[in-house]
Length: 228
Image (spheres, rainbow, N blue to C red):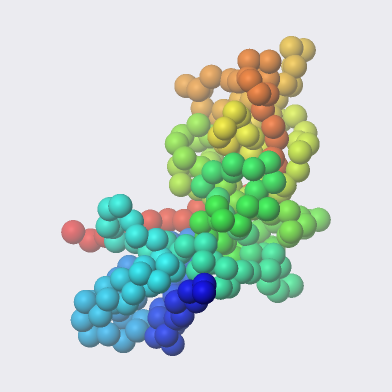
């Protein structure tokens, strides 16, 4: 007999929804103190016990190292509230990835780390097709001269073709990243927006790079200032 998956109590469901909505709204998880305040607990230990229960039931990841904002939803938790790509006439729900392992990341639900809720007013007309949007997190300073900083979310419209001169999400070997797509008489190449980084020629790669989509926007989440 297959064992039924653990169910959430009303209190656990309330806490999980608060964590999920915080991630969607701001891109960051709430702290234990914020969770404690939301649940109207007088002691932070009560919030810690609640988080521990959600981790035991498989709805929150157990981090290798504790930090102030270490509440991360598991795929099981995300599946409880799988968003539509266009929640209203004025907002898009954009799935987020820290790396793109598949050529079509929109098929890869398990690797989604969170979602962004974005107003369509942030995009130029004609508005992009919401079912083709995803976000990739930028790591490092390879695109800093284009104003894309470490930790930014690049909003990408899924497509296998991008015009020369545009910034794209590109799969290079087994990893993905952001580059400006360029072309000269020697052919196509990828140009990081940082002069300390080398360009990548298509004929130097094995396999050649594969374009996954064009960057059409940036979402930046500012870290809160912690008073000493």
